[in-house]
Image (tube, rainbow, N blue to C red; front, side, top):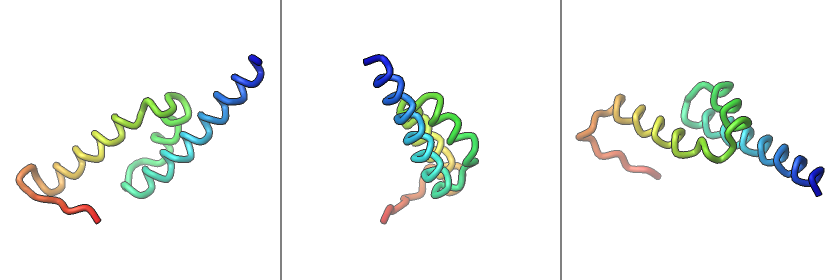
Length: 70
């Protein structure tokens, strides 16, 4: 049973790392940093990623601009 949990945790880490790699590639962030963060912290890093993306959009366009998402 414990071997299964170790395998499941490792699989979750790899999947989260791949997910954050793809998301960082789309957002234009540093891929290595977000991949390592995804592997170490797993899905707990998602709110931080979204906040970083929002802060970057606000710094590029300002707070008064309306941004439409497709």
